[in-house]
Amino acid sequence: MNGTSEVNLDAIYSYLQQDYETRGYNDALTNAEESYKKDNVELIYMDLRILIERAYAFYENLIANLDYHIDTRSRSGLVDLVEELKSRKETVQKHQEKIREIEAGVQNSSGLSKRAELSYTRGFHKGLVAITQSQILK
Image (spheres, helix red, strand yellow):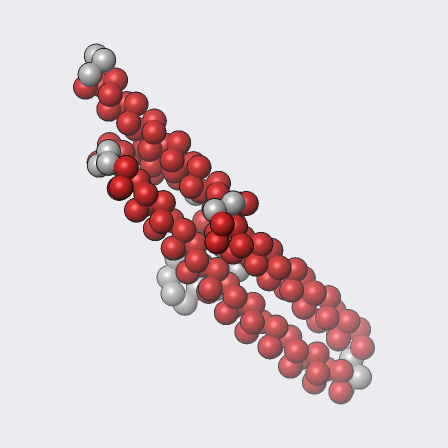
């Protein structure tokens, strides 16, 4: 995802649903140290924080744009369009609330954000098992 793309709630969900288990497995095969695992989990959370900040900026800009259109279309007497814009704004605000929930989960390592950590850790542990089985228990 490049720096100019729009980051919304769907982008955050996509990030959280990545295949962290395979990533953890491969990382364990590369470097089986616990500190390496912890660093990579922290990087996952840091990248998520970046996405959250970008999503906040995207939605703040969208709300400002919606407010402008609501105001100007309201002055023009376009009642139906204004109602549609207000409905869209409510949806955007609900998305912002979901992002706040995800952000709170990042702060205390719970909720949806915990999924990425658990998946990565599971994969890392599977990688450690594979190393032991191939090198020691063969």
